[in-house]
Length: 69
Ligand SMILES: [Zn+2]
Image (cartoon, rainbow, N blue to C red):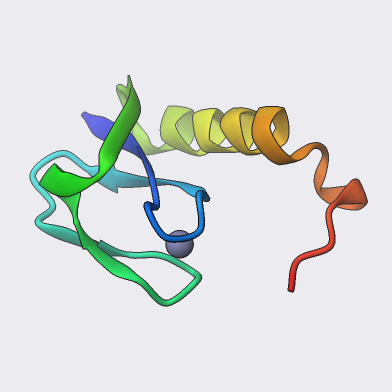
């Protein structure tokens, strides 16, 4: 089981294996998984990756149109 999480600092979506204590986001913030917002769940890592991409695109648009700082 994987959890789809949202970074409280930058709002990016990421995933972590269930049971993981903390997760470091690409923005540099390390968060306690249990204190993060659980957006969704996935059965395996492949599904987790797809869901993260889905939420990212829904929130920020297609990567081609996003300028990351
Ligand atoms: Zn972040």
